[in-house]
Structure formats: structure tokens, C-alpha cells
Image (cartoon, rainbow, N blue to C red; front, side, top):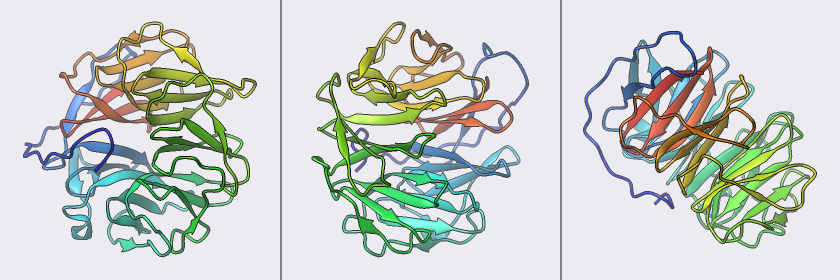
Length: 312
């Protein structure tokens, strides 16, 4: 079970997305993933195709204003994370291991050889060397050099093997958020890990993201924290954020940082120093996944099975 939500099946009707240009102040427009449960993850490939990892029927893709389930192989499987590598290969981490598709989701293969724990909460990639990392629900972190076909445990230095979030920064430093021991980083592609928890609360690290300017942000159940590449400790970022649980983070190409929370979305235009509520057009839903890109749009997945879209 995903650590911060119980999976619920939802029977939902289809909605058409109304996309139009506008300023960053326009309302969010709603889509719905049918019978998808929670929208845990969102991903974008180089062609602009958008994918959603859901809590009930694996991975969906968005085409012609409609969300469609990709493969019968992933039916009734919770897809907690979806990523795309530089070759366009699509990976999803599920409650039953890792699956890969090399043709935009038309066909999938399970690639879990070597995984000692097949409950996959998160995935990240070193795009320079095409190394994939999988964070598991109790087995720590695993690494693959061959498109996920073989996995190797890389837990040297980890004090907590319940991995809830992963991100890779511009220098290919990997950050891992854990359930009880804060954040760990690796500068050698996972061979060793160093703990960086000074300033963090004793709380689950639900989300992580990094920025081009060198900041790393960690979303917890006790608010949002920021680390710079010159600091040795985390600092609380709270001005304007009323929510406590920060489930998702993304930085847009336009330099706006978005936080998905239990109170909707908050946005920062100054790398996290100040925040404003940015949930107009949304219902009272928790935002648990975020994606930026694809023509200047931001996508937000919720715990009610919906995906919202907005021009940033």
C-alpha cells in the first residue's frame, strides 16, 4: 500500500479537457481517468505524450482529449511511479515489480530480476549513463544498468530501507527520501549513501525535487524544506503555505515551483521563499502528483482520480 493513501477504486465518467492559452492566473481545467483510483504519478516523453500511473488499472495515456488504459497486463495493478528514459522507454513501478514498454505503452514486459522487494514506490534515472534506480517499500534501493532487466541492491549507508521518494539533480546526485530517517544522497550512482537530515522533522519524506540553480526541496508531512548545494542542513519554507503534507513537487520551465498538498496546489515564483495558493478550478482534493512541460502546461493528479491542467 502506498504509504500516505489507501487505494480506492472509483467509477468515474469521462470529461473533455478544455485547453486554452492564458496567464498563470487562469483556472485549472479538469480531466478524469476512468476507474483509475488515485493518480500517483505523471510523466512526459520526448514526443509530448503524457502518461499517468494510477491506483487501480496501471498506466493511462492522454490522447485526443481522452485518457485511455494502455495494457491489459497492468489491469488491477497500482502504478505508483512512471518515468521515461532518453530512449523513450517507459518504466512503471508497481506493487508487483517494475514493468517496461519500448513502444509508448502498447506492450509491456516485467523486469524485476534481482528485486528482493517488488513494492516499488519511486523510480529515477541518471540520464547521462542510463542508470535506473528503484526505491522500494522495505528493501531499500536497487540499481539497473540494462533497462531494468537486472537489478542490484545498493543500500550501503542507508539507515532506513522504506524509500518513499527519489530525485536526480543536474549533476546526477541522487536524493532518496525515507519513511523515518530523512534524506540520503549519493554522488557515486548509489554505491554509497550519506544522510542529510539536519533541520528536517521526524517525518516521512513524501516528495523530492531539484532545481537548475542547485536547490533541493523535500516535501514532508510537516511542511516543505529546502537545501542548497552550499548548505549542510535543511531550512523550513513556510511563508504562504498553510498545508502540512506536501505530496508532490515540480519546477516549470518558466521558473515557477509548484507544490501538491492536502489543500490543493501552492505556487512559488522565487524558488520557494514565498508561496501563494493556486487551486482555482479545483475541488477539495489532495494533489499527489505533478508534471510540468509540454507546451507550457502543468498537470496535477489527485486522490479523486482526476488530472487537472493549467497554462503556466
